[in-house]
Amino acid sequence: MNDRMNFRAVAATVLLAASLSGCALGITPESGSPSSNFTANVDYQQAWRMADAQAKQCLTGDSAYAVRGGVDSVGRTAQTLVEAPFTRNDIVRVDIKSLDAARSEVRIAMWGEGIWNQVAVDAMHDAIVYGVVGCTSYMPREPVRKPR
Image (cartoon, rainbow, N blue to C red; front, side):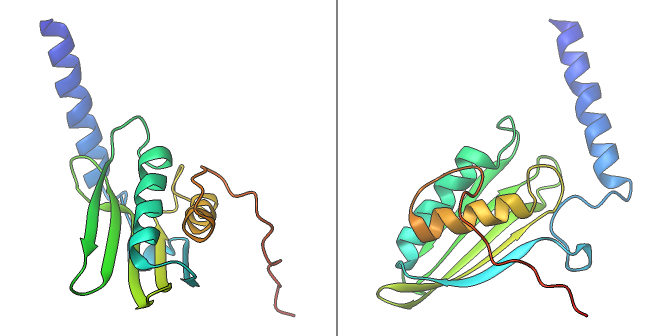
């Protein structure tokens, strides 16, 4: 049992050191994190329920990352965050604002590493818009046009 505790302490120390050694862990303005801003034809509370379910099912790794956030019914906003262990930096951020009784403005940002990439942004978008949780998107996207 003592060896197991020592292993965990060493592993935690290594992980903490790696995250503090200049390797940015989380969403930062200069990181070019994948993101999406859109209007969803669902109320803000339903959008939050789907974002929360999506985060819990698909974006916590091996349950190492915490999902937090909630609904502000007075401000008619909601937020879902996935935070990294030790640093508590946001790896995923979904901000939702009510536009009216049936529409919401949604902003999604992901870290851009590992499972928190553009595929995860697209899957989060689809979970909110279509009300179905899935860890990847099966919906066709507009082709990205390259400037000439």
